[in-house]
Amino acid sequence: MNFQLAEAVEVLERTPQSLESLLSGLSEGWLHCNEGEGTWTVTEVIDHLIESEKTNWIPRLEMILQDGERTPFPPFDRFSHLKEPSETSIEQKLLSFQTLRSENISKLKELVQPELHLELTGTHPAFGVVKLSELLATWVVHDLTHMAQIVRVMAVRYRTDVGPWKEYLGILNKENRNR
Amino acid sequence: MNFQLAEAVEVLERTPQSLESLLSGLSEGWLHCNEGEGTWTVTEVIDHLIESEKTNWIPRLEMILQDGERTPFPPFDRFSHLKEPSETSIEQKLLSFQTLRSENISKLKELVQPELHLELTGTHPAFGVVKLSELLATWVVHDLTHMAQIVRVMAVRYRTDVGPWKEYLGILNKENRNR
Image 1: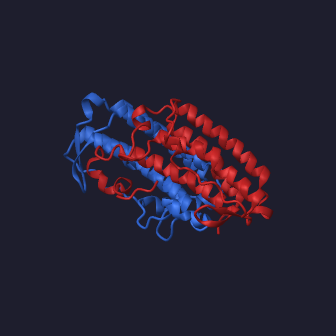
Image 2: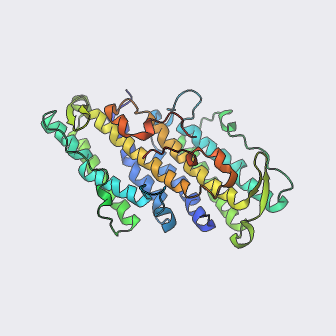
């Protein structure tokens, strides 16, 4: 086990600014490309991160603290952000994500005392019993997964443009891409 | 073909600041973990990006402009940064990368007129004839590949800590990781 709350917070705090630096002001070509039918654009990934801040991490954390294993978490719909495509700019979306994330980190720090709470358990609708520390580690890895997805979606746009260098660039050659 | 010089520059310009936002001030645990023997830490990836700014992109670009296909590029040693591990902090390394990248983007803008030069060709020591536009697209995808690598190395640190959520997090489950 490597999980420590303070180190996890370091990553959670940095994600919005990293995405802002990477994406703010980019051309439409970068923001609206995807990896093929049924895959997400960069903009859709940000919508998903916003949705997760609203309905996934802190609500589940609060359920563990309040109810323990008694009530299973409501399932999280990983596709709900695709149902109502929004018209707001990438810069507005990045700002929403930043704001929600700051609020959620404040709540996290207020609610969780690492020496008391990390081993508390709740019930996941698919997995059964899960620990609070596992939920928080997943929050971190979820950020990193979607950052990896964003840069991969952008890289794939140049799959043909790199010519023979494709052979050296593993990111362009995977058949089974992870979300 | 999707390549356009102005869009490529958008990405090249953003990489240093994105990495700065993600990595500056992180604990040693994040900076010095790797994915197992023979794999790179986050810090080693930054060393490699610095080395590439010095010896890869602009020197090859200049060879195409000056010599065309006549002289093959000298091979780029992808492991040279591992030979002399440096003691400087991640913040100093990120600053070096930022500085080198800014200089290189200035040179790129000065040297390349997209309507005249993108189709010029040079000789790659392994691939043979390559186009200037392919070199530049590769520079962009190389940035994105190494950003993907950095977030993956960090994610893998929590492979066990996420508990049963591992199943949903594809980034933790790949056997063949791309560099």
